[in-house]
Image (cartoon, rainbow, N blue to C red):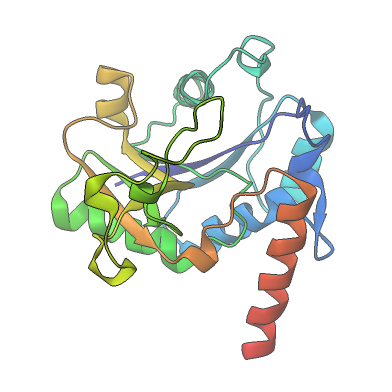
Length: 231
């Protein structure tokens, strides 16, 4: 099965400028996803989808294939990840390269490993899945979450099914944004990363950090340093 890793890294981040190339332990953030993809050995091509020649140059330094930049249409604030994926698949097809599957690897998940990538492909093969999405266990049960009225009253905050000890609650999972593995035919036919035939790959919470703020960077650095100290 021919596969491509697509790492979306446009340069227009407003919340944290240049987030995708911000140094994390001395290395650009997007480099972690490139290195994990290459180390997995699962891809024929690893491509960083970016509108910036500067970003593309950094991606090339770490081994990514960068034959074109993302268009203005797919780099806007209103463009979706699906739009960027379609463009990448189309541009490679124009160069004579077709892929049976792609994996969207967001650079904001730098603790995702090559083993995680290989394991997701294993789930796809085992389940004969159309797509595999990574999830992790939730830190807190959603049964302990609710909205608040204007006066802040918690009279009806805890639902009846949430009035249990933590050990008695069911395990809930959330998508962690680290891995989206999808068969190309399914995506082009449905326009979706999900749908029938979608299965979960369960990742540890320690590798499920999703960087969106300076605090997230500090947390990821602490985890990376802790991991190195354990080796």
